[in-house]
Amino acid sequence: MIPDLSDSVLPVRQTCDNQTDRSCGAALTQKPETLMKFMLTLVSDPALEPDPSSPDFEAYMGEWFAYSNALASAGIEFSGEALAGPETATTVQVRDGQRLVTDGPFIESKEVVGGFYVIDVADLDAAMDWAAKIPNIHFGSVEVRPVMTFD
Image (cartoon, helix red, strand yellow):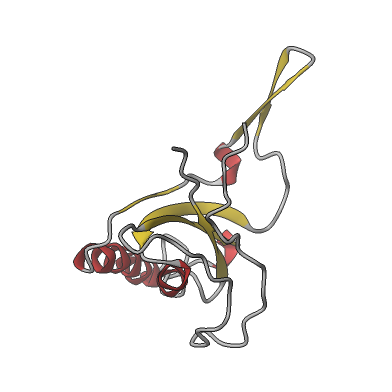
């Protein structure tokens, strides 16, 4: 069954010239008394991250802890996890009633999903503001999507 999205405005993909342009991005509407959940999917090329054995890695990890602390300090409910590398992935498919299991990621790509946050914020603008503060935003990207609610 397809959920009723008639009260929602679905996001429209747009190109943003700068991070401070408030008119950039789609406007999602919400009931004023509620918060909306957004998933921030973190995508980057692991080769661009500081090497775990380098002196820069500790500072980089500190940025992630500071980001999570900033969410908590702002009173934002959130969850999130970092994911192990794509070489640890197992892909499962079912075709003609048979389970097919493949070691490794199904899609070969330099960029991988490295983790996610799910945040409760007022609207898409707030979610984009938090996405723009993600520590790897300067060499990766963050996909911001509303989490569907089923009544």
